[in-house]
Length: 215
Image (tube, rainbow, N blue to C red):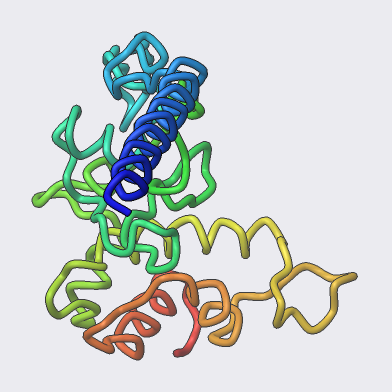
């Protein structure tokens, strides 16, 4: 009986050792076959020299090609008017104007806007010479905390240009005619800009005044 137990222990030891060697060999093979992860600062993300024309001034900046326009404006050019709100293109706080059209700068890469005309809130007016839309926002108290205000103003300025150009919206009654400057049009076109303070009625009054229509 004792001899049987001894032989059983030897068998188990030998089997365990052999199984461990097989597992270790498989793990080594998998490790050798697995691709090596590249560090974030490797050559795959080498910086590029990007020419950004912002508010009439050209800037050459070294950027990671994955940098958003919003981060380039805020972190590299110190233009902090455009705000990082949701960072998903849903709140409109980062709205800027590119070639006359409004875009959410958190959803576009800076390298994609090289050579285009970019206008931020800093380029619309100055404290002593406000843009008409800025002056209207002040007059009608179209802001409270002010976080969304730069995006609201940039969006409103470009939106009025859309209306003037006759570009229709979802509430345009007759697509065969030029769109008209109405409160319904303004509300629809500004729906992508969220004001968490709820100053929408004041914002509409400011836009209507600049557009020359009754709110």
